[in-house]
Length: 315
Image (cartoon, rainbow, N blue to C red):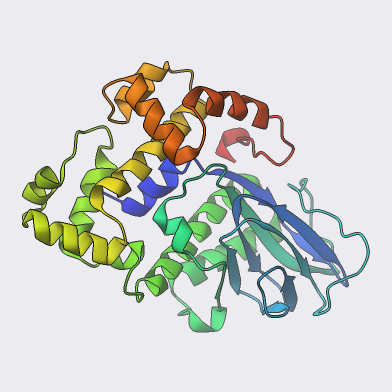
């Protein structure tokens, strides 16, 4: 199975496109991206990112991409000095051509509203930059950025849908590049994908979180001994298979509680628990609140101005 696609699906990501076209000359935009993964694609040059945990302004040349893996408020400006005074907040832009005196910027945010996070998101560096100069001219990510640049600048029929789709493609390619970089670490979810047995175990767990998995059953299906799988899984992922399964189950449960009206016992069964009582006990231990309280809070949170809403046609 496609593990990355399943991780993104289970996370319940909601996307918002921000400042689709332009950053005015000598200007700046503030990005209040709390609880989100945000990214920027520089279509012109130069731009500078000002944000927490950065040693200084982060310069972006044309075609460069930057991923913010921890939600935080940050500023993108045309100056290496952070502007003083009020800075307008970025929001979804209206249709229309880009001003001629603008420096191109395309930005998006993919919201991760609830914890616990999948280990993939937890291990990503706070800030990651992919330089256009380091990408092959015909690499998938470089070609996608060129298509994105073309659609943003031309704004022809259907550009709105195309830009939204290209942003999703850019985000996935960008994650792929960063995951491959992270795979060099000795202990990471990314490096675990290089171990055949561990990857097979991950695919089984992701493929059916509701199944009554045991370490013995996993090992049998993967084709290694129980002790070998346990050791290799912990060495690669930094956790046990069953603890990882619990995280996957809680993520699935949070998505069901937030997005559906399913009864509590039905949610419990779907994510692999025999009854609502046992499920509720684990859920409160991991998430910090009861399933019913979580669902109530989700209903209130939908009114938050920073809670993303699904956009028309999936945008």
